[in-house]
Image 1 (tube, rainbow, N blue to C red):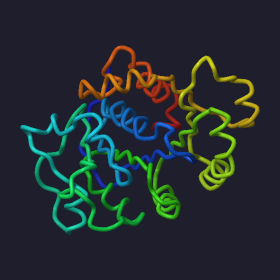
Image 2: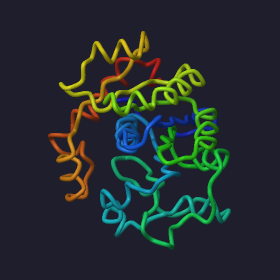
Image 3: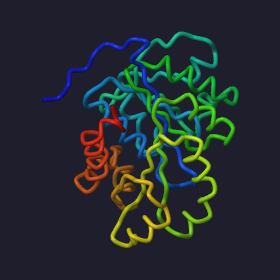
Length: 248
């Protein structure tokens, strides 16, 4: 039986940040899928303070055409209260903005303090922050203020090896962070990867494939809404259910 969602209190609020030591490793989709998984049991928000992507890529404007859309970032930047529609889909409040519209362009670069304050003000027991595209100094501040951290790494040697120094710095600075390998597919030599990572445990996220992502974008749905993409979100759900030390 699923746990009932409960009202948020200041002490309940949790920040979960998803980042990577390398670009294009699937941070945004991992963070979005994780938000959807957590929303099955709790009230959740998703914040995308860095590079805009989700709104345009997956047609979120279509979802909010009738209900209306709130630009939480613009409200924060202008010192306005968070009023209006909560941009709900999949039970998640989506704090995102269109990437190609000047009306939604940020007025200033948000600091780590700004991002954390905005995230704490969003509705829900959890706010999942997509940290992709954040400058290193901002990223470190956001991670330092987070309750949970998920680090996503691509296992391809040509990407993992050059990013290894940055990955090790993140793991050293945030030893309680959870490492996720994305994508994990039959072409990955698991023993070699484990040898490279040492004794560090990691989550394995299955390869959805570019075809599934493109198909989802065309249909204005998330990849895990499609049969061929469900295993991705299911893997996060499995880890959430099996390890309450990671996802309490």
